[in-house]
Image (cartoon, rainbow, N blue to C red; front, side, top):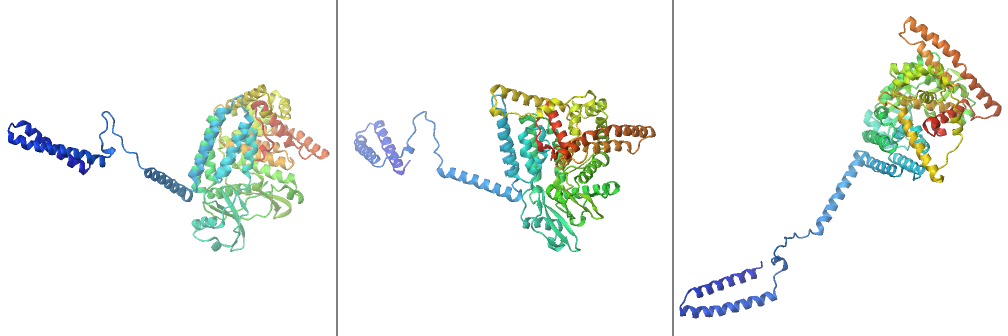
Length: 621
């Protein structure tokens, strides 16, 4: 209330009390006095009303009607502006911290969460008979590929891990994810130099006579620089990308989420059981001390093998110039196996190259139990033997991704291969049932990368016939054809679930062995199928069982007898091999080799038994 209002109130109160006194006292003197005072009261009230009209009381000061709840005044606009400003400042600080301290790990993985949520919703809504399933697969493959390439770094390795299982995914995934094995962008030299200084406390120029600041190669985890030691030797210096260590835990978490969504929501195919094993391998690959150790272990095995010691070479590592993020190894001059044109120009023997390669990896898988799991052509260099210019030598590099087989699994795997050639279905079933697999014939076909017919002699014609027939796009199908295609894909998922009956029993080594086998087959196919890969692999499997340490006299006799029987039977596989070689020579059909025939047959088996459509490049890794 205003000061004027308070004064008026006091005036009214005063005159009211006087009026009350007049009424309570009955004397003429007082009456006359109060009469004049009453007149003054009336004049005072009239003056108060007149002044109130000139200066009215504000509406906020007036009493609210009875029953109306009190209302709080609306907040001033500045309060909301402050809130927006604080939020924007907080987000900006978080983004800066994420970018500078965490190498954008939070941003990258938020992008992954959003993308995967969209994908899950897309499949949940549109994977029906009425929608275009091919268009759906294309959208999803494009989104995942863009996510992986945009995030880069370890996401590329994650994509490659998914690509290892791409044969159980729609064909568009096989095409898209094959591109993830190409080179990656390189970091600027000042950033790479910091890694070297942090790990060794000195600049690269303090250690090397010269070093090329431009990387000669760059991959998802590291890039390689050529340098010369003070002592004159040329070396390859592999330095990890600065962001890898900061991003690794976040990215592996994203990989787990991707595989979980694949498993539970998108394809409903059992793949999540492989996650822990794969993450452990990927994490080990980012520690270059593990890579140095793997290379030294394999180098020791090769040097002790009289058949391979002159055909294969493993570059030596300079331990004093190697750390968790830096690996310095011997520089090798030669021709990459991926450079087919140069190999052909030099007229180097494809048969000699592939014989060394298949024998090397057969020894790793069936005898040594130490397996290089990334043998793509870019990791193999061909050169002439320094001790004999007439011979070729295979140099194996990049020893980051390895598995060490358990002895029990290695023996079982050897037995599986030998019994597949002996057509011993009972023994094959016994082994694969221990591994939680529900279809021995199909598993044997997947392991050999050729149709396994067993002793019931399946013709396999249906598979070859289906392979030769191209499937229409669902966009051009009639409604009935589209429903049939949808039912086929549902049936494929059911077959895969039945195929892996108990994922807790599946030997996880098979994940990377399968990749190794596919790449070796792809290399042999790329070179024109100059060697009988199956015979070499099976020969190593049987020989390893016959020469196993710790066998009793009776066991040794039985294994030797089985090996002799195996050699007599396996020789029959040469018939098909030499027929295909003769056809290649006579008709000059380079792409009609033994591996090409096997690839077509295995595609037919996959289509018949699982409904899978395997692309031509699926075996190239």
